[in-house]
Image 1: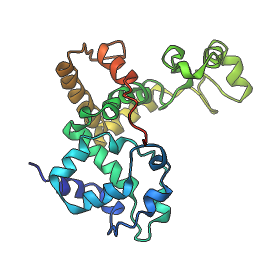
Image 2: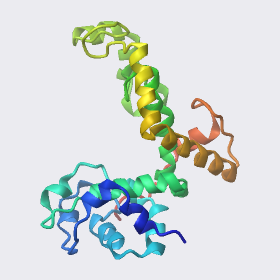
Image 3: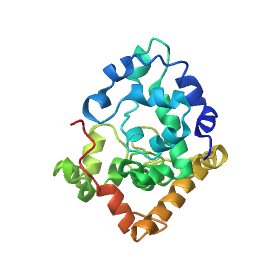
Image 4: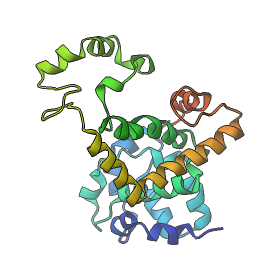
Length: 237
């Protein structure tokens, strides 16, 4: 078994996020996610601090590390200056690098995020491009989202937006050279390797699940599965 604790120690977020936990539970008391999900940041930090690699591996494969909303409320209250949310970030990254994220329902959703929000960065220059959202995939938005898309120019111009126009202003078109530079930044910093890890491990999991997988886009069985799956057992009982 690999030494996951040592691997976590190489992540600056882990180093900055975990000084010395005394297991007081203040982080859990203030945590919004802990109120609704089967999630306890105190237990996570205490477990990681123990250095028990077998238990850390279970954590890396679990649903637990994907419940945190990264609101950083825990950072504001910890008497020891710990930041459980940063510890969770480090755990998530290691889980993605090792492919353990595919072992949980919420973890597998990282593939859907990469194929949508992640790739929007290169297509549009924005993580979330309002005009790229599909109403059919977000029924919870009701009819208003389709109306906005059908009348996007009029709606957004009233709010000062400049859709598909070069220059200043919100929703402006990002120049191609800027998007090319952005892609180069991902390549130099390892972001592209990180994306490739998610793709590689997701493709392997799709094969294990017997689901069709395509190298591009969202029109494939595996994407639809991870985008829609919901066991409905994530909340506190």
